[in-house]
Length: 142
Image (cartoon, rainbow, N blue to C red; front, side, top):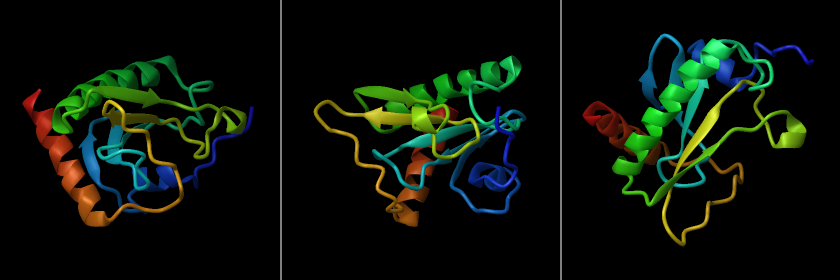
């Protein structure tokens, strides 16, 4: 198995070396807005423990992360008046993974609205900040 790269972008975000729009943080996870969202409100749940993906993660880290994924999904559905939620998690390059630190995508979905392409185009920072605030407020209301 390939070794964990401590210089991946999420490791740098966790160390505070790269800014992010933080929605929630606890001892085990960090929730941030995806800077290239596929829908308004697209958030990422990132376990703080070092693992490339689900295949090498500690079971306890997975348990803590999935509990936060569920909570963020509930809040996201309310905050963005979504009809549904897509949860995505990719493992290894052949599985679609592009950042090799375990993370979960939580994406609000609306009937008949396709996901935007993951084009490399970053969202406006003010939009990300506003969406982070909406999601924070919905989490606080749970």
